Image 1 (cartoon, rainbow, N blue to C red):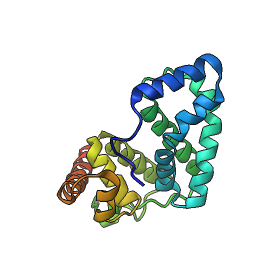
Image 2: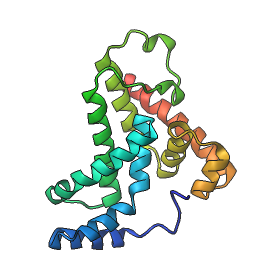
Image 3: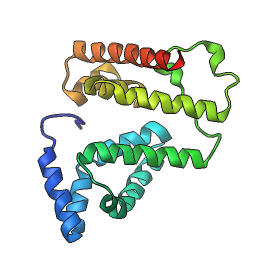
Length: 190
């Protein structure tokens, strides 16, 4: 199953389906639009929840929220907007269960070992939020490969198959993405 390839529908198709739903409340149009992006939503949820079943449930819950949320927004790029909605859904769910966030930022960026030992929940949440902002700033190819490698724990070979990038490109994007994340986090700490 490929995540990022040329066979994905164009943004214009998304805009047509979105417009049709907004004008006519055509649930089939919304369903078609959402189904084109459910894989991305699933992987965003899996990244946060680290549980397949909880992530699958979240995909359905997010769709239910879209029915009303979509009408309250001026959406320029549906995939980008949906990514943010999905990420916020996950963060809100995790925040509602305070103390249960278990995200190892050390896998992304090397931090001094004493930094995490006595951090409060709000400090950890702040670091997680900063990491998310830094990931969002990565160039798209780095963001995709870093996400697949660190968050979804795919090996290089699987990432090559999923993305269609060459092995050298995958290694380079991951290495550069990790360096850029470290630089971004360091700048924020300065």
